[in-house]
Length: 159
Ligand SMILES: Cc1cc2nc3c(=O)[nH]c(=O)nc-3n(C[C@H](O)[C@H](O)[C@H](O)COP(=O)(O)O)c2cc1C
Image 1 (cartoon, helix red, strand yellow):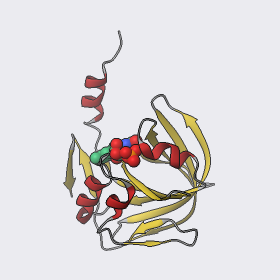
Image 2 (cartoon, rainbow, N blue to C red; image 1 turned 90 degrees about the horizontal axis):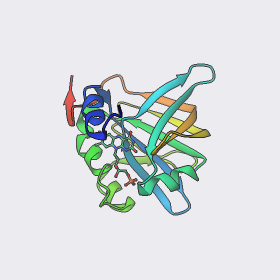
Image 3 (cartoon, rainbow, N blue to C red; image 1 turned 180 degrees about the horizontal axis):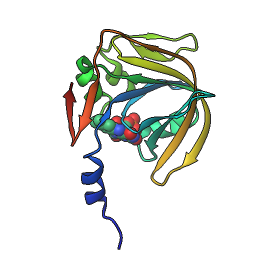
Image 4 (cartoon, rainbow, N blue to C red; image 1 turned 90 degrees about the vertical axis):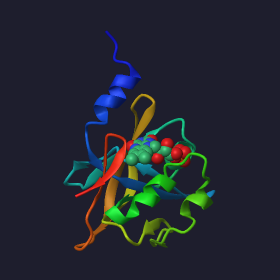
């Protein structure tokens, strides 16, 4: 018996998670997309993964990038999460109005994050209709004051 995409989505919607925006730099400019498929993989060396759908416009750009940043969002960044999940918006419009700085290699980092991780791409694995990108964490920061944004059952929530 095969599992339908509808029931699979319903079930996975019951798994709440934090929300991130993965940002990166490509020859074509800076890019970013909202991602909840993010987790820690290894402590030594420090490694994380993100899963990105192959059909989106970001996939090809990210697959060619040497570095990316995982911005872990604070509760005030809900609008940003929607903006960076809108496939109708090009890169320039997604970053419009967003407050960010750039790291030494030129990657965007949002200034109001709960935390962020600066990663070097170490491998890419086929995961079906998504690719699993494995990154080694070169730098990471967190804010003592902020609280997280959560995504559960297709909606955003706070603590
Ligand atoms: C809360 C939330 C979590 C998401 N998580 C992921 C994810 O883990 N991987 C993914 O590929 N897309 C995810 N998306 C969808 C992408 O953000 C969306 O398809 C976006 O348009 C992709 O960017 P692109 O059009 O530049 O490829 C998520 C969207 C939302 C609202």
